[in-house]
Image (cartoon, one colour):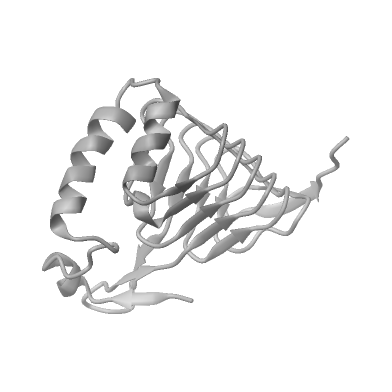
Length: 183
C-alpha cells in the first residue's frame, strides 16, 4: 500500500522515517564511518544495526561501502550476504528473508515521487525479499515489490512489480526469463 507524504512536509522534516532528529543524525554519522566506508568487521556492523533497532539474524555479511537509510525499518534473516555498494533506501520497511544474496551495487528503493502532482509528493512502500532470493549486481527493486521465494533478478534489471517464486527475471522492466531449478 502506497503512503503519500507531501514534499513540503518532507522538506520541513516532518517525514522522519520513524525516528527523531537526534537518532537520524547519530545514525548518519555511524553509517558514514562503519557502513559507507572500507570497514570490514561484519559482527560490529550487525551489532550497530541492532543497536539502532534493526532485526538481524545469524551469519549476516555486510560488505564495505553499503548505505542503509534507516536501520529501524530493516529486518534481515539468517545467512544473508549484502555486497559492496548496496543501497538500502529504507524509508519504509525492508524485510529480507533467510539465505538471500544482494549483489554489488544493488538498490532497494522504498521511495519515489508522484510526478502527477506539482508538489512531487513523496510516496513510500515496503520491500520484501523472501527466502532464497538473489538480487543481481546493479539491479533495482522498487517500492511495494515482493520478490517471492527463490526468485532471481538478473544483473542491471529493475523489478517494478512482484517477482514470482522460483523464477528468473531480467531487463528493465524485469521480465520472466525462465524457471529457477535448484539442485
